[in-house]
Length: 320
Image (cartoon, rainbow, N blue to C red):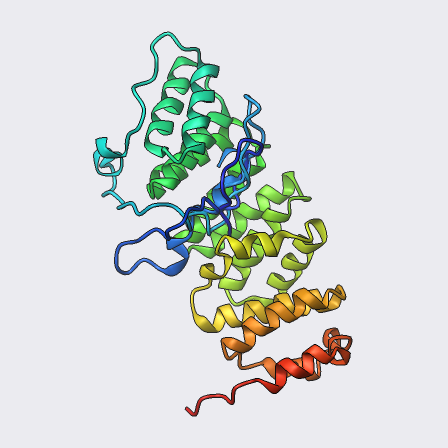
């Protein structure tokens, strides 16, 4: 499920907006929610944006998009003032004489500077100025997501999909919102809609895999992660730096996730990365770690002297 950090060159969402501090959440929100903004970058939003009209792009969103953003407090439903207080604003009001394209461009710049409340003002002004576009609504949704206004973000993303049923990034971003809300079935459906339009997006496959993982459908999750890796050999490295592991609901799920990724890298004969993820699974006391001795994918790894050295440092499991 994933958000990525917006850039000047991309426009999609893998749910990844990042900063130096993890966002805080209300008590009771799950860990996946606390990192959701990373996925926004797809097409103007999981936080990898795609398909912008101004040349400014973001990366597709993934459920981790919030990791490096400064703390923000979610507002009650329908309360705009609580999520966009004056102290969050850095820019003046949208210029009355600016065109819609100019307002969109200025909004992109403000979002790049993480001035999300201001960016939202400029996107709304651009929408009002017209012509209304699916891309603008997707960008407005990404700004809402960065402000932790999930219901409002979903409305913008859904409006974007209605305006352009072929806008894959918007479907991906709807899926990100559902993932954050732990509605994994609807997340899966929307990720699949995104993939029907763009099957070659590694971020979409990774997001779908994470939703399957949350449903404990590990076989389907592995298939999606494998496809994501085929499309983008660096996708798991990039997401790891952006907090992908924080998406997992429990330590056990996180440990299993690392083991699954290690197995995929082993199958691709990438032993360096295999050992990296296997070490994480070991440090997290993954219960199925002994599979490294029997699973065929690890056959090559078992010949690597670094494997024997690492396993010799394995800590015995804690007694129940």
